[in-house]
Image (tube, rainbow, N blue to C red):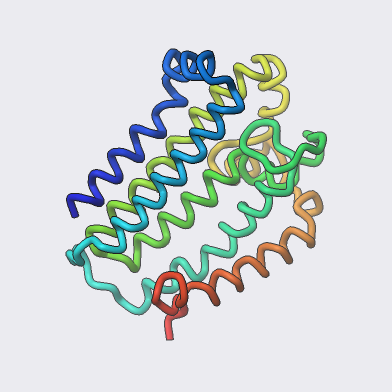
Length: 227
């Protein structure tokens, strides 16, 4: 368990670097933006690998017993996490992390009508729902860490995008969105843009979900469906 705790602390320290502007600025000035990004990406992969190995080797300390109904929680919620992840990779979103360079239309926000931080929401759903059936201490440490980072991340992303876009432009684009999923829809500030999300993304999310189910026994060693 000590190795897992050390891995968690190292992961937190490494991810605090971008938040420390003087430190980040000094590193970028010394090695350049491109080299900094490459080095930081490599460091992140090392930290993730350390976390995975430490988690796999941690002793099983039960906090609560797993009940069969608990397995339904991630099974039912993960399709939505997959849709948010697909949306992150394919939809334009100048307000947060996005894999698309296309122009963003606030009148047709697509996945952004659900939340402007779809990647963070996807990770939060994944980590939060997996804590339910995994009631051992190591799982709670790992998934709790990832859940906390996913919940704290949007505030940092908002601050960065405000600085990049400027206050006026950020407010114009963010006005009809929300950090909390569906808060803007329920508050009447926007509509759920199903057409903008599109059948293609829903289909891709369903395929991703199916692949995750099939890969789960091989990668994790546990069949995820409650049978």
